[in-house]
Image 1: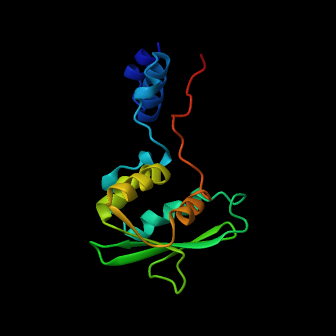
Image 2 (image 1 turned 180 degrees about the vertical axis):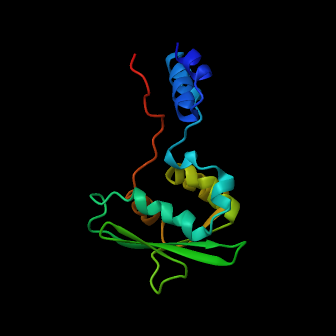
Length: 165
């Protein structure tokens, strides 16, 4: 019934909801293309934006309760663009810097393509990239890096349930 309603409706939002709900009920839930909130933006859309905007998305994922007493700065040195952007976390507030601040606790060196590849799930992808060498930890420790990302909400692993069973 949901699939038929989806095929018949003209409204694209309702069509998507009906067809997604039908797939969910057919036990194809794990096949839905959803890897977290940032996966809703295509990589092409992200690449068309200035890097400052890409880093700005982190500010809405700060968990103030987890980082009420944290003061830490993480710098991303984007080697192929010769740019550095820093995320400064102070008492639950994230500030974006387009230059390296005077004090940086952790600094990473990476290329733009690697950065875009990690955006969907930074907490999971970053350790893999450090391990294979596509991201270099230039300053700080892996423990500090983990502490920094522990201050953010983790992306949802599953699409929110659309229907009840």
